[in-house]
Length: 284
Image (cartoon, rainbow, N blue to C red; front, side, top):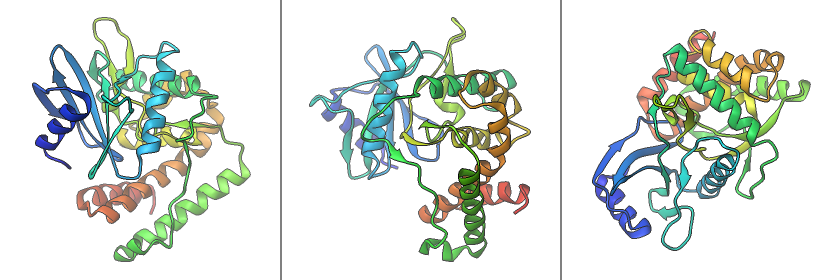
């Protein structure tokens, strides 16, 4: 993760923003984030891995699309040169004006309802949205060399990929624009108005929408812990309850395998331990 000095210099050079306060956001799977106060405005700054600039820009375009459909989401701020992102050696930076409200507590049942509702509303509003940066959903590679260091993981990845492939072939799944990393900290609710929204739209891609629900459920701690989140999504999203409940366990296992795969690839032992514990609890 870059230090505050690089963050500050990038914001000054690319956006002409002079931060008065910088607060790191909780880590999520695919990016680093900060809340930044500059002048009278508050912003969310996201840094996504090198090579993800196009999907990040697709996510920013998706945010603009949602704003046009009266869904509260951070407003992308263009660079001084007119770009949506700024590329650095650490990855692609993006800046959005912060949506008012407090970040959701993923363990709170009422907040879970907001969480599922907004994820479902975003999925529904993005039906038919197109952008050249949207990448097709890609499964893990069970033969990837980095899996050799964790023999148990190669078998788990193969099992998860095989199960998902079987589901996508035999069942008719609802596809659309994925957020990719819908952690509770990405969603907010304004106590003054009761209006909930999203800080950003993530590094978007195209895939089965239940994968986003599985990613959120993983953040909630699992199927039983995320029951209210699931109910909120079913009420607001475009995926029917029959499809959701049938394939959610399969895609949840894949999500945990994705977390473990990334942990091995990037050398994140704590993330790897958490993912293995979750997989073990699912019967691995």
